[in-house]
Length: 238
Image 1: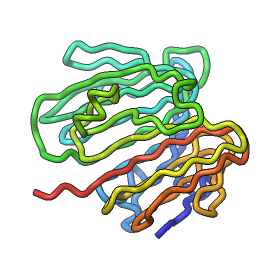
Image 2: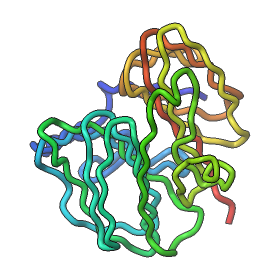
Image 3: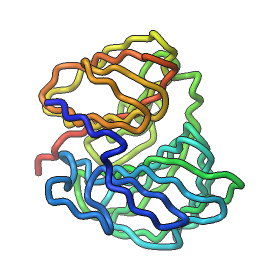
Image 4: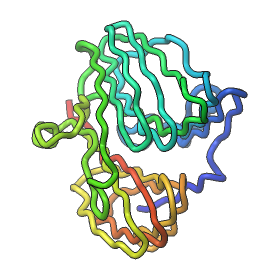
């Protein structure tokens, strides 16, 4: 199964300071047919105006990944963490049994990011936050694991999440083709960050998405200089 979800068809909520597009039900947008994809619960495409942001608020029992497309986001939380994540880089937060945090665009330009929520493999536990720079040159022409719930990936440099999932990213020059074998049973949700791609015969423009199940591999071709990210996630068996 491959289902394309074009950016123009995403739910759009105008908060004045925030232009939010929702791939799945979230906040004011409710669609019982769009409640998530496997353990992937939220994928928000946010544009945050300069010197605005999300004030201190709480979460629990969710793995929250922020991939910054343009600009930067500044995080603060009640654990004492503070950090600024720039374009191309990633921050992760395990909400655990509860955390309070804020996310602000303190820059003089708009910040554009993807916010991704994945259900944890188990509820509770201590909250955790981390961020890391991922130079785009290091994933030029190939996939890089940016965040993961698997020990081997974390030891190789991926940010840790407490979910049976991986976040991949790639930066591809025009004409580059790569193949990714999909693990058995995985839900894959892929979004183009920039440029234009052809994936298993489907054309994907910037901010378009593909929801993928029961497919053996991703056949990815860059039709222009492009970037993409995707989550490969597995249902946790309790």
